[in-house]
Length: 374
View (spheres, one colour):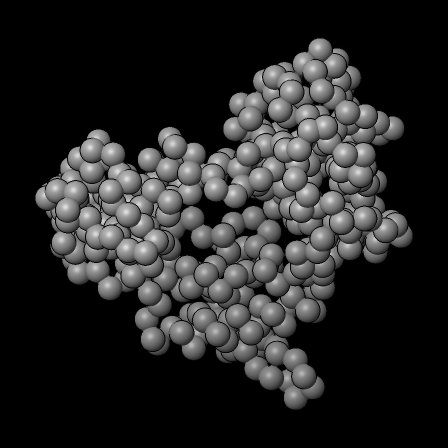
């Protein structure tokens, strides 16, 4: 069913908001923009599937559904939820993500088509996935593809929940899925960490890089353009090392012509570099310290045990702990994932014992790593 006017959308939302759970997906284009451009929204409740033309309706009408008590069932839905929040001003507080849930059954980053085939015994046609979702009218095969992306989610959720409950892992999966309901925020003051070449900047240039990269990030949001299209990384690094006094000081390259900058933008760049030069050292946001050499081997040892433990449990290793999680634990950084929730029980406590020398990782001679208390 295609929804292409706000009156029909209002009626649909009133009906779907009564459901305990609804499936959600989106189709969007992200090329050439800071924010993805939303084209289509797919929703489903038991017995009904709807494809919403996001270009033809007032998306604020979706707030009643999205902000309501129903569980939003998604697949790899992190970006979908961010897009919905921007489009209608709300995001679900309760989420069940089938890709995350399947990770607790040993399926790492599995596609929806894979999970539908494995758990429901059905085949999905993914050929229209890369089609132009902004062409109008939408083709019949596009609408069918969009419907299929949500038509199986509610049934798939039921099957996954049953398997997880049998293994005693449903609470773990629910806890991890609920993280998707928490908005992610990016701090412009840390944007300079991602600059190519930022690691070679001297102390005096770091404050300038911080302010210049923050200016670029905010300018990209306002213009809805990729940050590198506003000013490339190499230009920011060069300006941080040699602050500009005029437009003539902004380096030109085959990828960037500073003459395309407006006089206002040039003035803002010069002001940002000046602010950076005046930043007190305590206000410069430095990236986390690199791991000291004496901890690098220990990181590898714990990572090897995590991989073994993941295989033993048939859980996606990336769910248990990333290498960055282990490095953060060894450096005792704040808000550690390995000391929170289900990870603290499953990974964190043992990793702490290994790190403090109370437990050793040993090879048992039969192809497996084991923990041995000392």
